[in-house]
Length: 304
Image 1 (cartoon, rainbow, N blue to C red):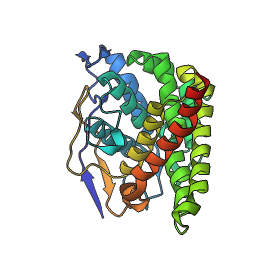
Image 2 (spheres, rainbow, N blue to C red; image 1 turned 135 degrees about the horizontal axis):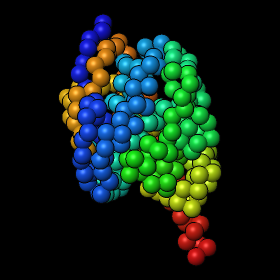
Image 3 (tube, rainbow, N blue to C red; image 1 turned 90 degrees about the vertical axis):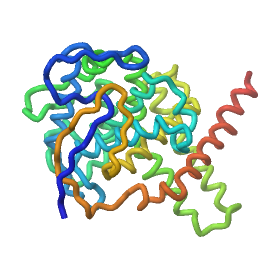
Image 4 (cartoon, rainbow, N blue to C red; image 1 turned 60 degrees about the vertical axis):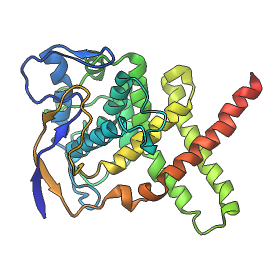
């Protein structure tokens, strides 16, 4: 069964092409029609990409991107939400950067002129390469490349924050498809027997995160607990964002505007529940943070 649904966008999206001036908390601002529409141009292009994987996706690429941003925006203003632990107290501009990473996490599924797809398994790497300028994003007209650097500067996003967004896009599949899947395979073992496998999964995840952090030189190539939590946060918002927020609750940082109206597939699975984020997700996050503290941070203290 299909039904239409009107969405609201809690971050940088403005449907109107009229000149709008608005100051964002934390000091960034969108001041001109061009500033606003650069992001809208990209999102409009993403609307041309549709998925045939209706079992796992209630919407297409655009809808999923909007829903993921909405989830991230909402979680970031909920101090008691375990997914946003140590993130909810960040300044508003940093929260906007995280929300923008959520909005763009699947940008690697677009920009290749393959408009209908079931699955693009390399999309995290492709999206990362778009953002760092290593791969061209081709607009749907087939003749124009999208300029991510110009878009980010127009939104008040610094080069360092652009690197952060690139890292979060690159790693967003690893928590669910990599780490949680590895932990799930250990479920029939006793707790003591599980620990070597849990530690191995933690190490693999952290090595991947460290590799992207070094490659971009984000934060001087150093992974912090905050970066780790941001990475898992985006992955979890991604899983929750395969469905719309039914109650319409939003965290408006700059704009709350009516967004594109599209169909919602009610038969799609709720991935947040299907893959166990609601049951064991936080426990898995704790495995990662505990391992990070006991290995990386403890090692730094010893060397100091």
